[in-house]
Length: 323
Ligand code: 8YV
Image (cartoon, helix red, strand yellow):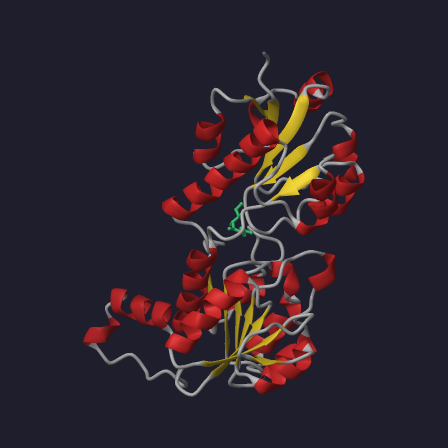
């Protein structure tokens, strides 16, 4: 029997091709000379897409009439129009759970780096300045701070637990209050006013675009720290650059950017921002676990007709079992 055909639009973590080998035929689209021609020729056969960051919209889906499943590498799937997929009976899966601790570790690392200027201090040592003088005292500390988590999902909770262990008190803003001990603020503005660390963990996409704007940054205040490990689109980057330049906030620790891998030139100029190249989940074990979940979703769907971790937009399809 012919193996089910999986389209891979771009390169993926090694664990994905390794896990698909022998069970699926994989079309590595980026390696083909004429991707459009390959898509047109193989459209009838392609029943799944294994995807890491390639935008997938309704027009793309219309080119693949036999498609059943899109397995996304990553918990965030804002590049995939999951509603357009659901309209066409296509199930979308993502990789929740397996990266929570890694991303939460990165968030706390960014926070420490930002408040205590650890990257700057390390650069100072490497430049040989320690022989001349001590590194200046950091203007503030993590002691006595309150963190507002924007998006208290799995990763948000992992960050909150770590913050508590650091002696930082935690509050949060979600669309709906959760059954947790942390203080809830029904609006982001109220949360930003109440805390002096704002940690962004909400999904990207139109609904959260520029949620963190000039007003929210002003509410965070001159001692405020912004940490973003979610999506760059959630923050109005131009407003953030202004706030950092004018010291309306104290600093920012960013793992994600609006137009990555491009970084706003204003962010590169200011010395009160710590900038990481989207490495939140980027360790070999965690990326392998994410890849394993991509493979598990494909195998489970084609062997048993059920995905392991469907996204909420696919819930109806999965319930009806007619994806
Ligand atoms: C990865 C992420 O960088 O899971 C996500 O949503 O942003 C990260 O873990 C990304 O998935 C890599 O493609």
